[in-house]
Each structure stands twice: as structure tokens, then as C-alpha cells.
Image (cartoon, rainbow, N blue to C red; front, side, top):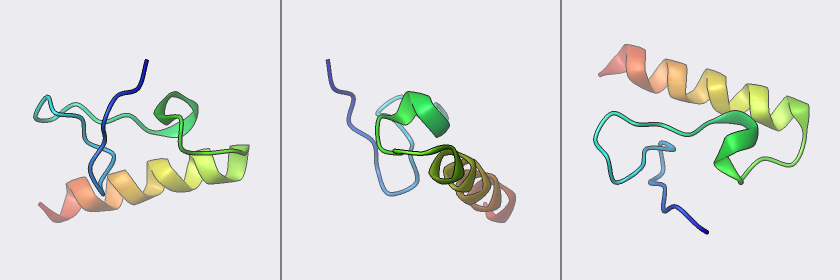
Length: 46
């Protein structure tokens, strides 16, 4: 099963973000951590 994410790792459900290992996009622990930092920065800017 695939869930569509936008450029900010947000699902079609407003306010629901999938980051880290659950996003299916990252392939390592460092990428998972970076996705969390990216979304955190995005959320702090909106």
C-alpha cells in the first residue's frame, strides 16, 4: 500500500505528516533524521 505525500511529507489528511522510517522515502537512519528536521523546520515556519 502506498500513501501519497507532498513535498513536505504531508499526506492527503491535512496536518498528518509521515517522516522517518514510516515515510517509505528514507533509506537510512541519517535520512530519517533529516526528514524529521526538515518537517520540523517547515512546521515552525508556517
